[in-house]
Length: 540
Image (cartoon, rainbow, N blue to C red; front, side, top):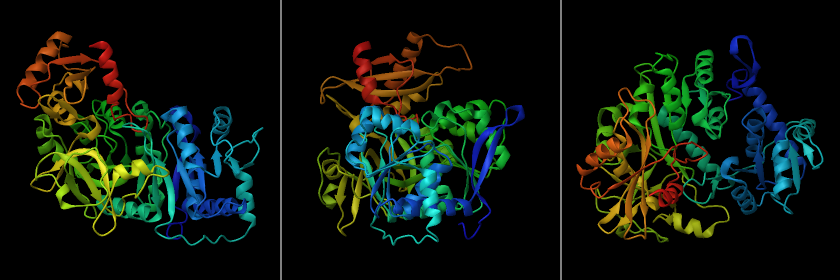
């Protein structure tokens, strides 16, 4: 991309304020990003790091984050990326498992590393992005100067099976696990995303999720890095997002359902229009139909809003466009059919197996669930990661060896394929209820109640022992309603009446209101049902 469009900005970065409340931005060209990452790569290898060495990276999105990440790839080094919001204890555990040889971080991260004992006794190199104080090591500027002085950079040969990165899951549905990416996984992801959404070099993206921003330079897109707290996308300032879209005529926007909810609640009532946008992509959780409807009102008629379905361990798996949801599948979701996530990617082989919590070593057609029956979603594609780093037990429970020797990933999600070949998502396997009357699937039940106009979202949790769980519906109320707000008893009566219409929700007799569901730190969209269940135990 640097050779094809050297002077085109690879990114725009917030750089202070101009008059009138407008942000000032600084441009970094593809040529500069290429040169900077070459120099950093050479400098890191000059420190003594070897191809395959793991490097913990704790740098916020910005020029250094992009430069260092691409430098690590170019040097054949393996970045270890962990969400900083997962909690200090979990962060320490993840770093201990990853066993990095080097730690690259801003001063705040270096202080935390010393204070909380991260990577104690295992680091050979410490690089600070910014001023270095008492903790020793070197600085990124010094590393880059050393690399620049070494002359033209020749990247080491890297094969498709060589490790490329360790990306930790958010831990929103269990303990964070480090998915080991190989270079072929990243290559496949770039190709699958480019082909599925017809992304072209020269486009401009507003990526509100840092890891997706890394795809932009590889796809030839200019990334406009927004001014926001990336650990709280639901709290992003919609005015600043709108200013960025308008100023740089963004053609693409990536945002979590929570961010799009905030953005569309602000923009749609005011009649905001963004004629430059060709597509919006949203991932992390299902996007409610009302959010899709509000977003559609803000973009051109021929623009698309797509929801790619996948996970850290395998992305993309399937995708659906907003018109299909609003015109057909959303109504079925409200009837308890689950959430349609669309047709599988042409390069992804998606199958449904019978529900089991046991490890499965190798594939057999006997594993398949009957057509149309809810089971666990499994996928085989070039983007599927083959293992969790340092977690053989978790790897065994999540991976199946296919007949050709390749690896199938167990998504941990429940769903089914319809007659048109579309994939429907019914909830996490670990969240299913086992009641005396049989299993209950979270999204199939919640879809019925989420359709009520005075409900923001619901979560089905179970109280008691598995096999005899009592279903409880947790409700987060819609704050803005167009007509008189129902009292809690009135709303409860209407929700129970809704539930009685369907056989799979008739057994729900207990409803508890919650002030605001706990959600994941990555997308602010996945509901922490384990925490809600404990809350329900105390407030029933």
